[in-house]
Length: 367
Image 1: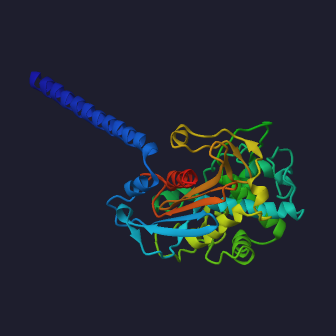
Image 2: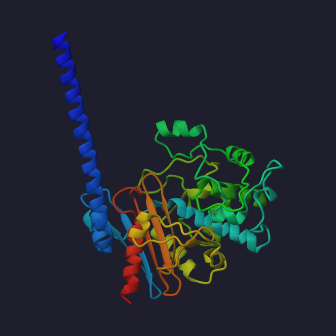
Image 3: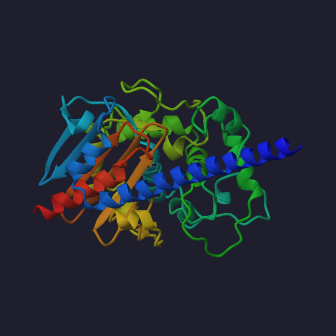
């Protein structure tokens, strides 16, 4: 009996020591992580790029610049080494939303949509509920969550697929019919679901599917011939799976390359009728996170999807998928723009957003 008690005490002691060591290790990692993050604001663009690609032979980060009317780009690999200036196909993630917003703006301009209309003016939704306006969806102030759980997400998790794969338009429309957004004002909540709903609105007014709409718009109207809804035909691999008719395509399914994205950035700098209105502020959001502020990134106001950073004079948007992240930022007054396309996940070391704003501000300071 005494021996058993001693063994039990010994087991408890060992368990406590192990738990203590694990807690100590985790705390150490967190402290080290914060220390490393604390160094990022002081890094130059070049230093941040070298750290991001350090000892990673899979790195393919393409950085494009518009300055003084000149367009150029470079491709970087492991340890920031410059690679041949080849065109690579990247997922641009939520930068897709800027294209969706441009299509909405086109419909507004032609009188097909009124920005202050609620969505039940365009979608077959139950009477008696209160629904958000087109403007609220564009500015992520509708009250809708980032997304709503649907059954396909379970299989997607176990199959390591895109979370939104297989979520149908019927599911999204059904959820919208269940939700009554009865608050007069909602704060900024970044909503992929909201842009899925905007996709449904576009399909309803134009009478065709989103993939056909957006591919025709970007390729035939904008002339971005290498920009399209992902069909996994790019050269870098690890692209997200999508069903042809998935509801969340309008939130983040486009792939592109640096040549097309620089042309797209140039369109933002010009008085292009598709985009000029998209940059005008529709809401003050003051949504900068603590982490963003430390990095010198601000989210002060928002237009049609585009985020406005008043302090830096920058209008920007970013995007991220499972294995890619991207950034496009520009300053209309200086005529400068930066595009960063990365084949790393947004959580990997220093994301494209931070690299992009560093490069953009360094260009501005060099004038």
